[in-house]
Amino acid sequence: MVDFIGVRRVQELVRDLGPAPFISGLAGEIEADYRRWDEFEKSPRHATHSSLGVIELMPTSDGRQYGFKYVNGHPKNTAQGLLTVMAFGVLADVASGYPLALAEMTLLTALRTAATSVVAARTLARADSRVMALIGNGSQAEFQSIAFYDQLGVRELRLYDVDPHATEKLVANLAGLELAGLRVVRCRSAAEACAGADIITTVTADKRNATILTPQMIAPGMHLNAVGGDCPGKTELHADILRRPDARVIVEFEPQSRIEGEIQQMPPDFPVVELAAVLRGAAPGRASAAEVTIFDSVGFALEDFAALRYVYKLHRERRGTRQTIDLIPDIEDPKNLFALLAAPRTAPARVPELLEA
Image (cartoon, rainbow, N blue to C red; front, side, top):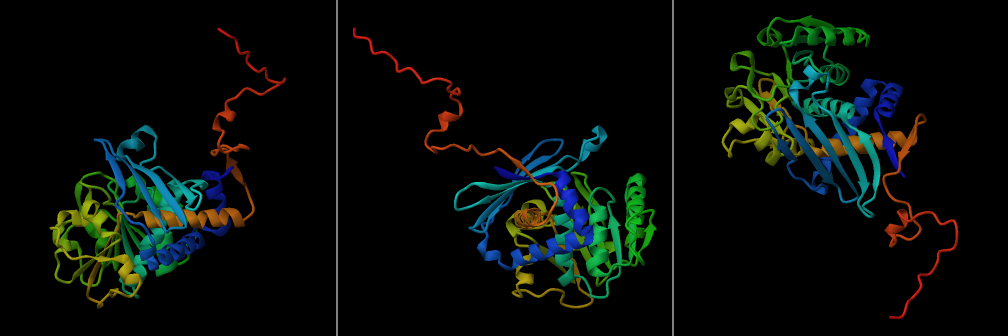
């Protein structure tokens, strides 16, 4: 039997810990895995594109455990009452090849994306950053807000979305969390939201080469957390922002980011730094208070691997709903798979008669 960590179990675990402590613990796991970067098998995710969206597989292994995530991105799904992003994942034992857990990853993807954002921002944003513009107030916005409030000390959120209902949803959800000292400002444009911000987080969903941020919105010393651009033909930043002489771009896994990130707009030799190098001390974090740091985040399999390991550990350690699924055959003789299909015997089997010709 394989452990099944469904939506209800993830809800239970997050509510038991609290969203902020859960994200904090997950951020610790993600950072620890990035620090052992060389142990992982790494490859760009496999993507199958259509005119309506994308379906992706994201695998990796550290030689002891293997994990993969199945995830979609279909921006028009909400018109049919469906989620834009849905995901599930598998964590397996490398030695036997047997799966340890099958887990929902729709909630986990939002949680790990927020956790990864703060892992990067801890070394890239200015230490005195207190104001964040949040452009795109959809499904990921609450998770990003909680993470930056709890771990970066953000105390003012400046919100903008082309859909005002998304902003109202976010405001209502944040009010229910009772985040002491947090000031929430509704803005009429992305430019208004960015004015005076220390950090700008963009997390939009449209699958197109959008220009959510223009050069005029960017001031020295800002940290840009560009989350929404995550597949070919989908960007959020004007290319001139990347070209700024005072800007430095940090990516998760360069070969994947060249295909899917903001840097798909740039020539192949455009200089970037991988997040693992920063976290391991091989490259500096923020170089000066005036530098513009850009985390060109597309989501990488290592982050999902860390999320699967983290939730599996909590699932095994903490009380509550525990489910398994009969995904793997359980048979006495591993060489006799057909025995699973044989009819139950109620009487001794007859030996076929041998007839002579």
